[in-house]
Length: 295
Ligand code: GFB
Image (cartoon, rainbow, N blue to C red; front, top):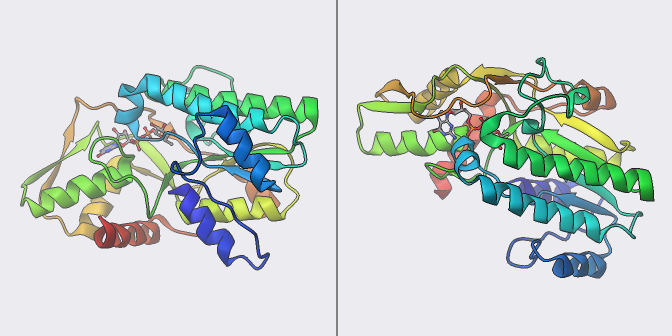
């Protein structure tokens, strides 16, 4: 989802970027040799690391081993392959789950590694934290520029719309549209519906990446959020109305809530000049439109 959005955005840029995108089919990032060879062959000015094994609360919580190992391998291979190439600017993507569970909201970059992680996604978070630390070491020891962007919960076209393994927006869209097709009278929202989440439309993240490439953003950690939060119940009601599903909404307490609230403080990047542009209503409309045409 992120990679395709970044390619769309940079292809439209007036800067005439020469973009080389890689997918699972042409880049085995689990292999150090392959990763190093791709980088040497393409000699990029900028590497955008959007590769990751991602998923929603259920996938993170039940495939804990794969989430930590696969993400560690991808991040280690890309960053290790760049040790002697400090002229390449590295833009590394992380996630808001790197911050401690008890961080004060809105969560500031200063909270990094100040406390315990939220348990449902701690393996994934540790892999993302490791990447930030490797990048910091490259910067301090070898002079690399490493800009770590920490987006809040993303959604949009090309997301994973699986019923079980996806994040909440694609998960609700998929399961509720199934319920509508099957004329189900009741729809189960996972958990209590009370957690608050902040969402960012993926094309807004792509714009932040273009902004980082074109501006002189220093190495470090940058939160990338929309600044707006909503309860999961209210989100489900918005999706219900957009899908025109007439059944009742109820709650499945056997599923975890995860973090009760994780709103990012994005002042650091906002002050440099990037702000998100897409409202949740507009983003949901575009995402559902894409879902109906493509899934
Ligand atoms: O988006 P989500 O899967 O992950 O779930 P997190 C957010 C909230 O929505 C949780 C509830 O409280 C879920 O219980 N929810 C309700 C649902 N219905 C559904 C549904 O149909 N599907 C899903 N998936 N959730 C993720 C991390 O945490 O945050 C990732 O697991 C990543 O690693 C991402 O860091 C940013 O927001 O809790």
